Image (tube, rainbow, N blue to C red; front, side, top):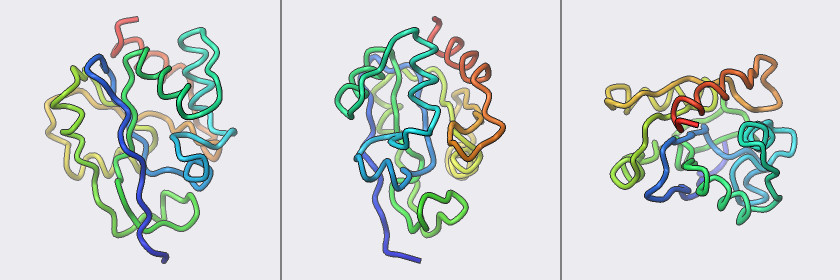
Length: 160
């Protein structure tokens, strides 16, 4: 195992209605210093299709896009030891203090991007008193990705 690696700060504001939590930034995301930085990840394409809007490249444009649409982003793991981008290799982790967002924003639902994010979230937040859902990972490594599940969850949470 390597040394501890740190994730990104959360993206949210007082208008955020849905919190999307991944597990931990991939190698490619860490290289571009923003969420879902792997061009093969379906996350940004899925949001673009859901809202019917093009999303510009780059962290500042993507940050502005999610904030404008009531979405908060973070990862459930704030620091860990990890091999490459493998969720299965996440060890010695610290769970992100999700309360930082929940105490500020009127979050209606938490969408957990993939099984590992869901499992770690449930370690601390299973009794959160807010709806939370295991979502099919948008990772290019997930053959069971289903955008219809994402669209339904987003529509329910955002009231779109």
